Length: 185
Image (cartoon, rainbow, N blue to C red; front, side, top):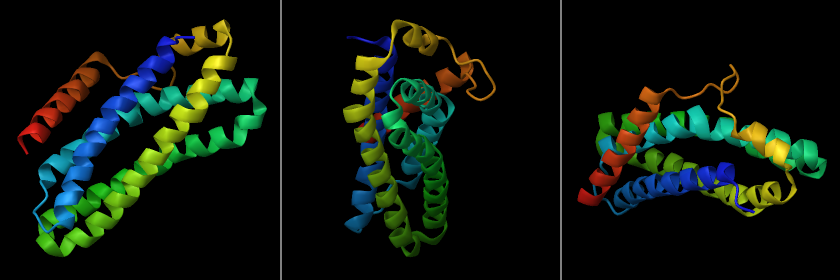
């Protein structure tokens, strides 16, 4: 059954995947001894820190909580995915630090940039695949209409802060700029 909540999460995954391709392309350049566009790489990571950290992962965590109540056999898998949201934030911090180091040191900083970047991409891709192939289909099949009604409410509590309209506009603008820059690169 079609669920707008899941459709929105999948749409955001598509956008994040496009930005991850920009990241991957810059890492590929570094691997072939071309100079990566570190400013573009930084902007891509800023986008990934903006949308997922502020809205996407918080909504997924709410979905995981609801799904664990309905299907306790998934609790461990859902807990791991939720913990990965925090791990991804740390990996993004580390990766951003490596981007800044590479900007300061040039070629000397590229090996660590590649190591952190490839690890980050691997975790991101694996995480999204698990959500898309196991969690979202399961949620669609087992959650009740009442659960979906609760999930469709705006995120207004402290634990899951809503992104205000100005922040949403900045994230969308950054995404558009990234896609334009990626085309030109």
